[in-house]
Length: 220
Length: 220
Image 1 (tube, each protein chain N blue to C red):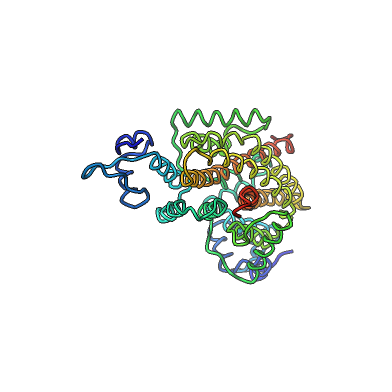
Image 2 (image 1 turned 120 degrees about the vertical axis):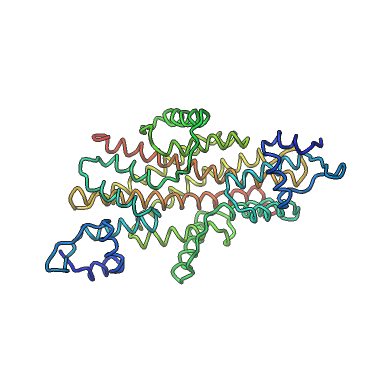
């Protein structure tokens, strides 16, 4: 079903000027021309609008990164598994990283530790960079005993990831064509990653406060 | 054992000019005067220097917040459990929040959900604000099925928090006096919270990539 831009705006909740901005920036493909200065838009535009909103509002991604993602979801030769790695790269904090021998050793250790868990992960994943930072910081600040929690953290992360993949499989399998599925998959990975980070952060603090209330019961 | 500023710098790894800056800013209490323009520093200065470094480098806290924390750890009437709530407040992201009826309802829902887990948490905890944001965003973006993972996330957070509290109890019980213990406790909460967030984030992405590799094995 093809609709005018006003109807696309009402259905998506995105204001018309914002949709026009996305069209100008190339985030959204042009509609089908029906007359000079008139075009109509289909369901695929609606799906892309939702993905753009998720990437901008929740993922806080810059427009340039969103353009790249929009391009990649159109490429049928990029397999679904690679799409997840791509989406992760954009929603993982990356600061400027030192590349000292100490850091390289920490990164190699991170890869070995994850390998020992039996997880199959491409060694170039940015999540290893993040782990290397944690390993180095914990040791520099004399907090190596924190790393004793490794197995507990890995198990908790595994349980949550299993659940995440179940949601992904349910949500990223619409009746549409291959591209619709890929758009939905990237959207779900980005939303689920960002929302899940926040939910896990908040619940961990609440669980710590509960555990602390019990432990320090006398003064709580 | 009292040492000069040069020795304090060598032991802590913090450069002398930086220590002088902390002294000027009131982050660090003055040493004991031994002669005009000479002072010596004890183990409590070393502990505070470590805490300042942790708050600045890992917690990324502003100097004004660190001053507040340094003040509070000196107040023996503030109970340990309240110190954890305070430390959490400083290391939990807080954006500008709308205070609409919808948001208030989401926050009340967050409190009810956590209450239903049987967790004892003060209702003013900032972690509830973070949860309210997650609830609202998930629903606005038609991703309510994400919230179906609530129990899995809560359980994982609980396992990790138990481990965190064990480390806290080991590390925050030095042989020193009450204040030394409080300094060590705040330091451990801030370091453990920030490092734990990063480790959990990284491990969750790696576990998702592993789960995705298995699921999409054909193309991985």
